[in-house]
Amino acid sequence: LYQQKAADESRINETTVMAETDPMTKLLNRRGLERRVAAVWPMCERQNTPVAIIMMDIDYFKKYNDAFGHPKGDECLKKVTTEIAHCVRRQTDCAARVGGEEFLVFLYGLGQQEALNWAKHLKDRVEGLLIPHANNNFVPYVTVSMGIAAKNVEKGDAFWELQNEADKQLYAAKEYGR
Image (tube, rainbow, N blue to C red; front, side, top):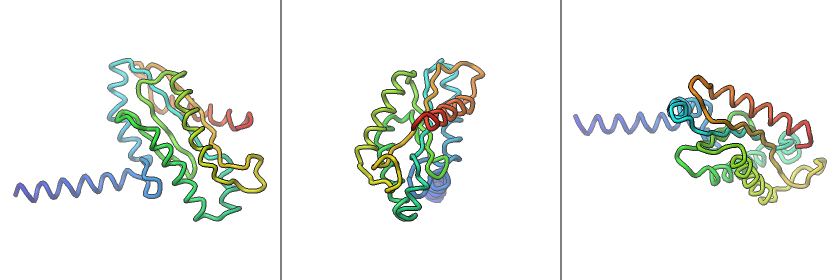
């Protein structure tokens, strides 16, 4: 009975991981992000923890797919997400694929300036991959745009409000030259 229960728990855990992970990038998917936030956010509220959310996407990714095809687009996504995963090291942080070429990074314990430094480091790593972009793109290599929102979480604050602010910042970055 004990062995059966352990085997059942193992299958449940494996199935949960599969259900909460984007199969191509190996980052969390939306479901996984929601579960992680539900587990961490109440602690952030209790401790008045600074957190940062970074919304990011690959610039002109449609042009990339149009020029090189979807298999190369998938390779590009994997390379970029490998860099994201490399930079998300702490257990309290997480990264998720929230759209085709759009990602969310949750950074626990970082204020605005630290999050900005973290984002610059990741941007440099992605640009350092030197992934050639489409010929009709104004930059020769794949780049990313990011929007950052950070605050000390207080009782009653909502994760999704901070995410919306980061999303607004991402669109402002795109509007003002990426």
